[in-house]
Image (cartoon, rainbow, N blue to C red; front, side, top):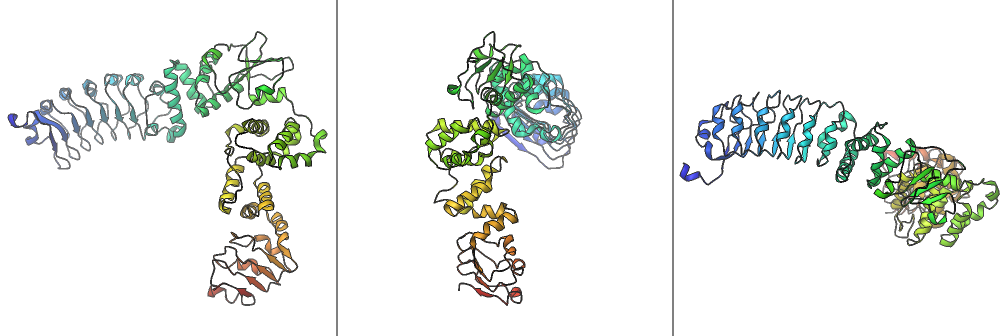
Length: 554
């Protein structure tokens, strides 16, 4: 046998054979076996023969009855993959820490409550499956497993976040840590957190700074000092950066006063630096007289070193309100209509003029929907005007930095857009905040282009819908044939008791209109449904609608 197999890798599969020990014929070839599958058996004891498998690299003992591993298991010095899932191990087999080549270890579905500190000896371990064990914590030495990339702890019993993970930025597939169910830590934010950890490790950040990152992202309070928090400003992931800046400007803040002096560090998101003409403002420097700091989008290490404990932080919104306080609406109120005409002109010059006149005036607070439509009319290349509009929104809309503005090429209406696409465009943008009125946009689009009527009918209350429908009434007839995608009767039609004719020709009715609504129109005589997708009337409606003249296409 030695002559025949000494230079070959041997695979033995003896799975699900109801055996309680390693079969003799496998033992006879132990010296050449590299891959052995003994899963789904009844093995309780591996016996002394295990020492003979010194060439073994892959071993599957899952779904057996092992309660422990013998001390001679350490003889498997070449073992790289070991599957012990779904056995009866109530403690981590310490002998495993003496297998230096081990790369993949599966201990899923046992009774492990703790891991030994000696686990740090598995320096080549890359994948560790610990799911469905009653684990309550991870040892501090776990952080020394520098090659470990995939860790699965599904269905664990963690009561708090395992702090050792703060030193394991190399971990991937954080969903397998299973921290969302028990600890309510969202997986998407955990993904971001481990990206931040990798960034902080490159910067050689302290463990306290890493703890600060976790606490700011996931808890209501941060227990770390200001000196440990500020280095987080060097991390430029947008979502994380916003959270950190919000925390800093909330925690280390003080109201601005007339004698306050402001320093602006870095490139600002909303403030137009060129338009600021104030001797009390410094850019990218801190003077002895500086009292408050505005943090830009990115902060360099050199700027970070300028910050000291006597400084307070304010948001761009607070700084703008202080430097350019809103004027009362009264003095501009008489020009409201003119301002609206400028904003609605779709001309960049007019929009810029309207904004120049009203950006610091409270009157603009009630014109934000018009400003949104003006924003979509600005030329894609006119970034200065677009940024000026963004600043106006930022000053007036709570949490505006979390909203998504339309792209530079977006238009609520183009001739190629379908009614459905127009509906979704209005909905997706205006649903983000109450400051933008989707119905106002829809009414304007209908007035100009005859579109967005499905949005009007979907979101108007009955009284407003009734007023809107009045434009389609002429004498004793309501004509809705100019609404080609209309597929249901407006509920407010029941208020038009005097109509005799209902013209629905060339609409999009696929079934007969709501009879309950029709029966509330006592004088109705005629319904025109020609050129609709409907081609017949159900028999069960014959009696109810027998008094009407109904026109259908063949």
